[in-house]
Amino acid sequence: MTEKLYDMDPHIAEFEATVLSCEKTEDETYAVILDRTAFFPEEGGQGCDEGMLANQKILHVAIDKENVLTHFLTSPLTVGDTVTGKVNYSLRFDRMQQHTGEHILSGLIHNRFGFHNVGFHLSNDYTTFDTSGTLSDEEIRTLEADANKVVFSNLKVRAFYPKKEELETLSYRSKMEIDGPVRLVEIPGIDLCACCAPHVDCTGQIGMIKIVDYKNHRGGMRLTILCGMRALAYSTANERTLSYLSRELSVPFERIEEAFCRLKEETLLKQSRINELQEKLLQCRIDSLPSPSESNRAILFVDSMDMKAVRNIVNHLTESYRDYCAIFSGSDECGYNFIIGAGCEGDCNPLSLRLREIVFAKCGGNAKMIQGSVNASKDRLFEIFEI
Ligand SMILES: [Zn+2]
Image 1 (cartoon, helix red, strand yellow):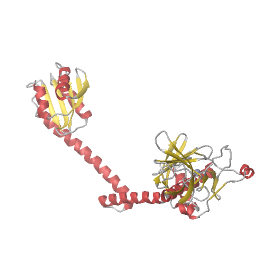
Image 2 (cartoon, protein in one colour):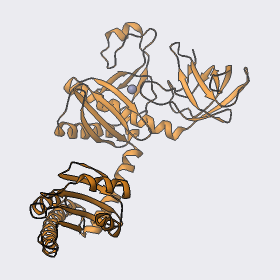
Image 3 (cartoon, rainbow, N blue to C red):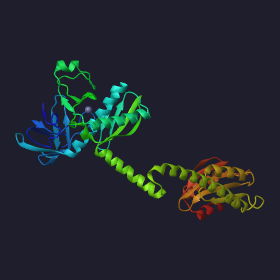
Image 4 (cartoon, rainbow, N blue to C red):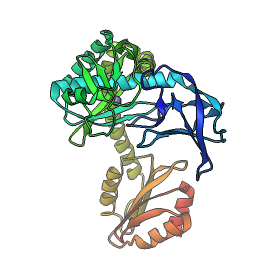
């Protein structure tokens, strides 16, 4: 069993230890066991600490059932040597802030609603945890405010191993039947939970606790949280976005929502005006086509148009033109979507074949109507229809 230096003092960033064993692994790395370590292993939904051991970057730290920790390195170490380990303390501290923040929220949720924490994941970007029941928007916001009040109270966080008899009398979260001593983390009056990870000393060290997302998940909820500098970075990024919008919309922060709604309404109105004008323009184009008495077919190229509207026009024109009617919507640069309908004497199948073989159009349909897309110029498409 490796002595876990982080267990009682999570602030040890540098330590010396003796190499007890070093073995080559199947993937060409070296598994090193020390007599003691300050590196927290990957455990309980949290990744392992990062840092250097004997001037080598630590690749991974694992723990087994016997509480032996293994450090993985690229080069071997000599058994019996005394080596120095340096933990990436800023990352460690950041994770402690996230993890203790999660304990506060989970503790408050458990006390108020009786829900259990049924999932936890602490990544380098965010922390998620799952609750066994659901909370309303209002309950979430109250919870967030109260969790921050616990931060302001600067309560002492205590990690300890109670004696077996004492443990049996205690009520705590994450109760599991484990052989050997159980480590409890206590935030007085807020939470008592079995946990193996390093935590901050006082809740004030967490900084802000921000719930940035929450959604229903497997009958309960998944909450995403950010604490400390992560919450500050989130707030800064949001402020940057709001500043940009505020400048672009020429309104103060508090009127961005109102300005956005107005802009959205204006866009909808403009779009409906564009649709009206497009229809008028199309009608002019249709009027300029050779009449059905002069030609059996009609071919039209239009700017990007709603394909439902195109289909309606094609259906309408095929009543007059005996052979076929084709409408291509788009441009030479971006390609065209098209619909071709057969008149009373027409057949779309030969056209479909020509379009697929000559300009590699993607299309489907039947003898009466085909629909598809093609990347070819207007001139090239006209040539196909002239064959
Ligand atoms: Zn924990």
